[in-house]
Length: 388
Image (cartoon, rainbow, N blue to C red; front, top):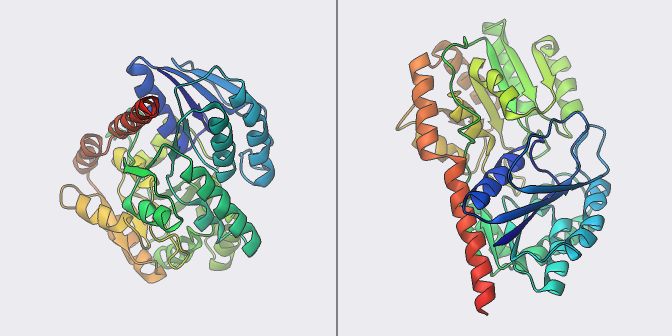
């Protein structure tokens, strides 16, 4: 079977989507399918390892931080994509990654060529955009495009039931499979030889709906009684200037670090030496159903997670704590976050507990298992389309 994967981001660019799509490609090729990936040309500094699938890139516009993010960068990928997909040797099925503009292109071209496609609905983009703009027109247009792309798919895959509920509210009646998400346990694992330092790590994007600035206020409170710790942000996001300014106001700027997003093999040592990783989700944004997928990589590395906010991440951590020491979930509240930081600092995981955490995550939440479920849906979509 011929499968085309369409995404503006793909390995080796560091992101959860890249790891996920790479795992899907590996599972597809492992089953004997021929896979071609239509993606953006990676930054010049990025090393590009060889893989079994064919990867075809095209130059795109990137933002100041080097990411394909924003209206113009998205369109710089999507407009050429229309022609790339139109003239691509006909695949049996297409697997696509948003943004919604990509969904519009894929639906139109796949309809013209009578190709079924599977939509990866990891979250609802228009809900997230509601926090990034005050323009009701922009939100309406984005929501219309997102619904258009979803409704044309043969089926959708997603990480949680919360996304299914939101998609149904947008009028999506297609079959939606909850395939979950997981960690690349081949890339993330504990390392007992790495000593744990006075370090907290936030690894991932920090956008308005994350509300990561609350970590700065909590870190300020925590640092009064526990000096010498570092709070390290690894990734990118539109809120960086806000977070930096807040760190100056609180008086902890010298203890807060910012590093660019990095591939898994470079991120792993940071997680191995951290007391805990941190993740937040601001309540009341309309995004409360979202799962904080960055938690998986941290747990696979044996690094516990401190999560603050609503949604399914908190009950996930509480359930995990029945089996291993996985971390602490609390409300999105500065005082509660500071208390959780203190608890993790005073009683950090032992080397054996970190090994146990990594092993449990590999057994229960492997990205490989998730990829198998996704590929089952991709193959079923192709077969069902042929039968009609």
